[in-house]
Amino acid sequence: GPTQRAALLRQLTGLADHVLATWPDNEQGDTARLILGDVALGQGRYADAAALFEQIRSDARKLDARGKTAVSTWRQALA
Image (cartoon, rainbow, N blue to C red; front, side):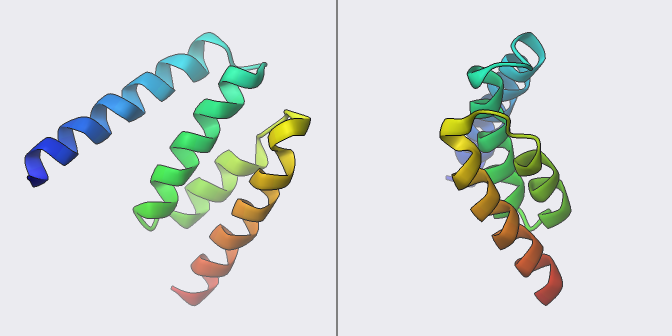
């Protein structure tokens, strides 16, 4: 139910926060940024999502992150 989903979301974001704090300058940190950005996007926190996606450094994830930044910015403009 909703309580279980909320607990799982807290667990996911807690892990992502830990990974980002531990490995901010490598691919693991970028994975955490993508996760946190996706959560923010899903919660309607478009500016937060865009800020996280814009911080992605990894070449392998940069194109995906730029697309998600554009989606975040577009949704914020529509809100």
